[in-house]
Image (cartoon, rainbow, N blue to C red; front, side):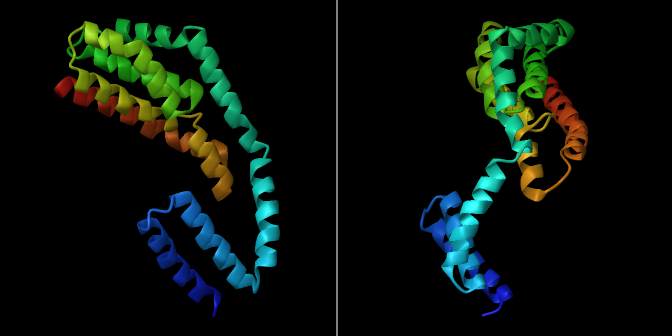
Length: 199
């Protein structure tokens, strides 16, 4: 079998594993591992590469910044920066129609630029902004939808953990990815605010 044929058989095998409800990460690992073993003519080389590739990827200097982003986000939360971001955004645009919800989006964008994680952004701003949104009479569904949408800005606005991991795996320049993500992140935040004002 040629390498192309092995690759063509690996993809349907991956889909079969996914449809059998095997977790996607494990399915990708199995398809890749078996494919690598078949290409190299044995699984000894695949096992050796498994050890070296895993260590090489996770001992990367570039990947060492991920815990630092998370730590910075935690310090920002403990220092009250998330509340300050929300209050600042509320003082700028809180007087408009839907202003408190737009303030939550602005605070999510600001906090996403600090920590780089969507989950941390959504969780932190949920604790800060959700009580305020409910206090001003926003419905629970609208409030949580606003914060969930704003939380996605955490991976789009640099510094983004997802962009760092993508840059490492795809061997791309991290600075160029960060520069490319700034405009879409700002446009997404403005688009969310526009939809809130229309709603």
